[in-house]
Image 1 (tube, helix red, strand yellow):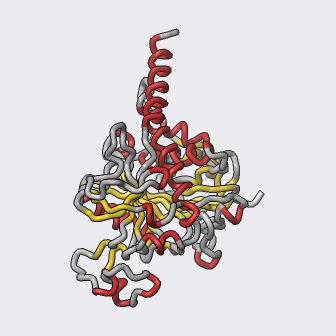
Image 2: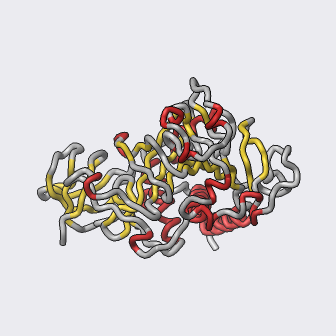
Length: 364
């Protein structure tokens, strides 16, 4: 066995060993909510009343509404994901009060402990569930600033009031889908211009590992067939790198909510015959993405996320229409990706590299 082959084998074995040691992430519930920095919660909302009964004027006070366990377990999909509310126990992350459950649904015997996951052995980053919020990205930035969201930790919102997609476009966010923010390492590939492509590679790999043949619509959408089932964006503030990720689990935006001529049709996993629940699906995707990331960066010669992403790239060799970007609105044919993640496309017999814009397929 050559030295480089041995190195790759050892790296893959180490990544697999790391994955085997990861403990199932503890679910933390932001049950008291998260007020806006300048807001003083009303006594009714702070007492833990159901967000469905919360006055409209109170909603503006909260970055994330209070979310009692019994309300969470009554939402679509969440009752299947979580054990009885009595399995939650008080804890704190970074000084932020939360409820937490141990893997398997056992409550912590020591509510005053820093975290129920503080037993011996490696601790997986937490999954923090919050009530209706402005955006899971807003909540994640606030929790990261409080020291409550480590790298690969995530925020999973039951719904959003002001979710933001590509180019900050509004994003409808009804309950039942995944509206998540994932904290990424602020170095390596996620500090480069290939960050978005690397993220797409990781989640495409994770979906395919679950038997769901997701492909990438350049630069940051997830497709099943020619329908969009998810989208991603990366946002950096004060040295914290977050990925905002939305996945249509049970519902999708109607056609009239999409940009006519610019957007592909949207679909939900449920509508395509794939049964999933938000928390279970999300935990699998994050675990597999982290495993893929660590396996890539441990390989000899560094990670090649662009080549990995190109394997999942949609519409290669197929005619598409380019909207916006550097070339205007015109037809072309996709060739693949260039090393920095730009889209290689032939337009009028000449190859171009797209770094912005949107594409839609020409019906075959």
